[in-house]
Image (cartoon, rainbow, N blue to C red; front, side):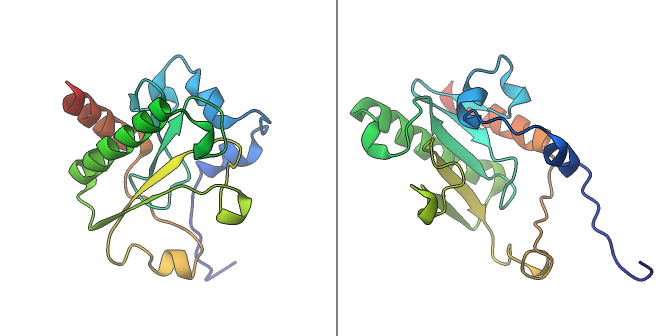
Length: 165
């Protein structure tokens, strides 16, 4: 392999070698005792915010209802209101934390729509910058995340705390 360049990402081995639980990852995260272990910076009445640990960009978060449903029509009006109030709050938090040039907010319902976890509804919030899809993504099929998850978590947790209180 002389002359070949290697991209070293040792954190991926834990996921590769781990036993894959058939349970819903969001339902499991909902029941953790320490939010920082699951990167949950904020909890509301009917939903919680979690960092995407396989993000498209730094600061990629998801708002997840506690109720295990696959589509919006399975939530009550109160749950919908809380979900989207938390999305709105999260939009403000992301703008303060990362100063993005844009923001994608989306829900993928069903596998054909791109849902990676189709059995449990979640809303993606993805900060965007001009040029954030660069040669690493297009040629190397990899993404560069410039900040450690624990640093992103701490930054977001502090901002949610200050925004609510």
